[in-house]
Length: 181
Image 1 (cartoon, rainbow, N blue to C red):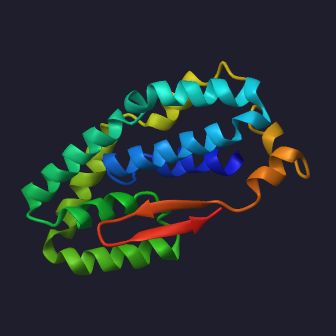
Image 2 (spheres, one colour):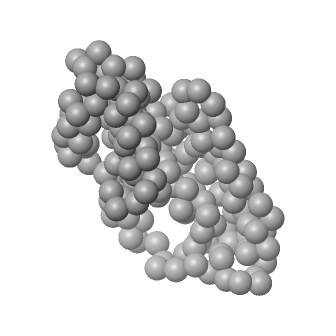
């Protein structure tokens, strides 16, 4: 459960992330996995799964807005959309990390003279899009504080069920990568 919650918060509902269609597919994957585990703790998992299922489109609405803004930036800057999205994804990394600067240099090289204009436009666009993760925290504050912590108690039946290793797909324009849980 802890892994599913992490994916939801950090990959699907994070402001910088894949396009809306990919997020919807990943969100549906999370719902299916919750449904699969629901028998382990129905009073805690079912309300969360049901609420997420009913509110999927509302929770992901920000991603459609982001997609439109990134497409506009790509058109205005005459840059490939996948590179504009990569500049957006760069914002997830810490500027104090080597990974950030390696990616920054690669994108700067690929976008050449357009990089700074694209980067500035992406950062500005992202400032004006509400973060879905804060909406989720607000909407799910009514659930018991440790609803997923109990499911991940070391050695418990819930932990054994989720530690068997599930794969979580992420896709980009060029490839699909599977991350093992």
